[in-house]
Length: 442
Image 1 (tube, one colour):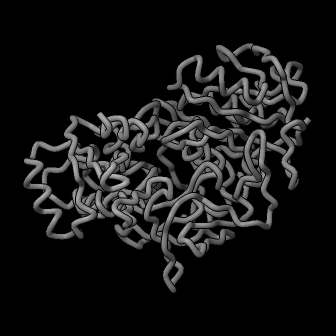
Image 2 (cartoon, helix red, strand yellow):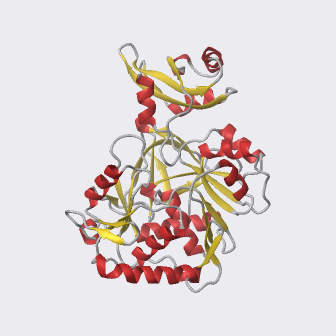
Image 3 (tube, helix red, strand yellow):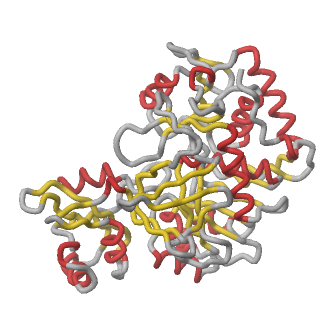
């Protein structure tokens, strides 16, 4: 059986609030008692297995995950928004036990234990999660307890997280950005404010009563439209989930939201770089304490640190001292600030020229009345790849194109424009580029 991973240990006897959910407040002592009881219920059924859970953003789900860790098993988090057949496929790849209806386990063929998923470089798995990539078959990332602890410690130090902090959690717990808030707050002794879903008006109201929050960029416009009234206590709002336009960041900062760009992924157990507190609305980040970042000879971002996952279900495994190639392109300046330019796989080669979609998207977003845009490449006999912009706007496309031509080289200007009501997005709010490519090809 896996050695227990128990982030509650430091504050388990505290009477300070830990979980707030729909008006109910649970102290650390309350949650610890619930976790103890649940772990005792789980114990006889587990036998060192990996256990798959589809968590909601509620206290019961947090207790289940913490109890499974305390019982000494690895937890596989399933996307509650996925179809049943999609979740079945995820579980089939790990051979996990499945927690169903919150009370009983469904045994899977090919059942594995945490020992079966032991990384070659050491450390035993605590968490198994599907990557939140936007194309292809997602990989199942194996994160150890050491990864989760290192990530949480780095974030706590970077954000100067205190026991009196309240961290708003609208991001889903089945994503690393959500569950990591629970882990770091448990270790820091601070409160997690759980919300079952994102709503612009409610989140605008919640931000007035919390000190920290994690959002994706697509959430900022609805919050601003709802009329955020400002807050003296709000110290930092991490904004990740892909590139956010500087205009949106500036608008949010102007409304009193202390936005902080962040960079990370499932493989780094959440953020590995973020803007310093007080840095302002800029799309640049620095490595968190204990993390290292470098740019390879061909422009790819590589990272290293104790928070970086050892590998994936089915391998390959990464030696702890080796650099991890993120698949993202970026630049690092002399002060250590990182700018992320986009996924290497998104790079468009048109007429022999390399074009990053993020640059074209930024130029298009700078035009008034453009709600959102995604730029992709489609096969072209003439150009190799033709640049296509999928855009939500009520403005004349020809007018937008004329504006963009004034700021971009001609080869970067989209050859075709597809107007839609809204861009397709993943459950975490990222642009679904696979769906965008289908729209661009239609």
